[in-house]
Image 1 (tube, rainbow, N blue to C red):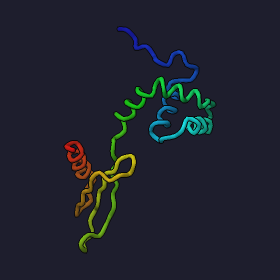
Image 2: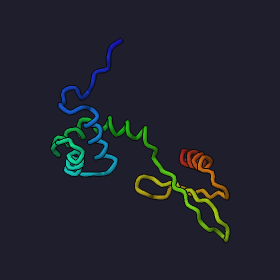
Image 3: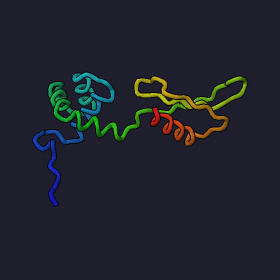
Image 4: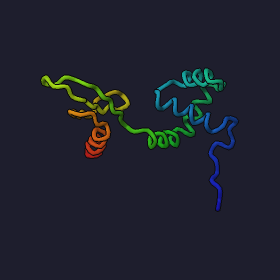
Length: 124
C-alpha cells in the first residue's frame, strides 16, 4: 500500500502550524499581518509573507477541509414573549450573523429545532 505523500514536506513548520495560520486567515477574515501577529502571540514566529505563501499554496485544501467540519450555520436559543405567551425561539444564522430561519416552540427542544433547520436549509 503506497503511503500518501505529504504536501508540506518541504516546509520548516509542521503542518498543524500551517493549517492553523490558513484557517485563521479564512475563518476569522484576518489580514496576513494579523495572522502573523496572532501566531507570534502563540509562540510561533512567522512572517506575513510566509502566511501569504501558505494561503496561496494550501488555501483551497484547508478551506475545503474546514468547511466540511464546521456547519454553515449556528443555532441560537432565546426565551421570548410572543402574543402574551413565553416561547423558546431558535434562530439559525450564518457566519455573517444574518438570520436564515426562525423556529418557535412551546417547550425547550433543541434537537427538534436543529432537525427543523437542517431540513429547511437543505431545501433552500
